[in-house]
Each structure stands twice: as structure tokens, then as C-alpha cells.
Image 1 (cartoon, rainbow, N blue to C red):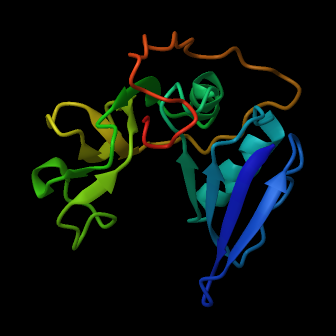
Image 2 (cartoon, one colour; image 1 turned 30 degrees about the vertical axis):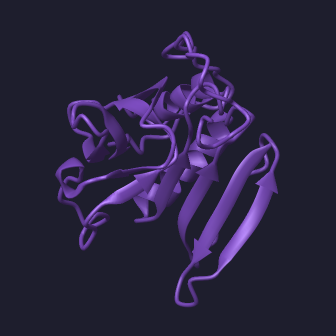
Length: 186
């Protein structure tokens, strides 16, 4: 299942769509943002092409992933990023678990972070951005990217061709204090 939400224009309403693999065939012109929330099934090339077309028309696609112990689909996330033409990857590594407030020094200037003075997270995964990607915020050590905008290629993928997964991630050795059943890791 794809955890899939759409934000609609003008009314800022949210529509929840628990779509299945292959079911994303069109996105209406009233939709401005698609949130892909911890999807559990690989996106087909046809679905990726719909999302690329949506982005090419000014729509926003937000992929919400997690750290490896909580969200065991890091390979799916990296496959999606690769199919979208992004270079950014998720390592699956868990950092800053236990409801940490990251200070303004961790934030980077962007329209998304404008007006923010800090951000509180329960636990986060580490991203490796590509050369044209833009980090929103870093971890408490200000060295690991936790949230970023990935540059994508809106050129459609060929249909019927299955691309190999771009990155195989071996889960980090999760130290005993992390609980995969909890968003905080505890």
C-alpha cells in the first residue's frame, strides 16, 4: 500500500488515498502537494511518470520516510528517489532519538524553514544529498542531513522496463535502546 495524501488548492483540504501499487494513474489539477507517507509497495514506472508530470507542472511531491528500524522500506525509498532522477539517498541510520529539539543552527534558509526557530524530532534517518539537493536541517551535531529537497529529472521513464534498485542499504546495527515499534526509538 502507498500511504498517499493530497493537499488541494484554495481550501487546503487533505484527501487520504491508501492506494495500491499501480493505482496512481492521474493527479487532478486541483492538487498542489502529494505526500507519500511511508509507502510499503514499490512505485511502478507508470506511477513515477504521473508524479514526474505532476512535478513538471509545479506540483510538489513529499516523500516521508523513517529510520531503518521503524520503516523497513529504505530500499523502496531509494528506488523511488532513483526513479524520480534524484541522487539523494536515505542511509536508514537513526539519529537524535527521544524527542530532541534541534536549534536554529541546525536549520538552513529556505522557504520551508522561513520563520522557524527550531524543530523537534522523535528520531530521524540520515540522508545523503546529491550535488544539486538542498538540506532543510541537520542533526544535533550539525553534520548529518535529516531533511532535504531532492532535485529530480522530470523526463518520463520507459514503460515496461524495471530499473534495478540503485542502492542496497544494509541496516545499521541498531543499538539495544532503539525500539522499532516506537516513533521515538524508545
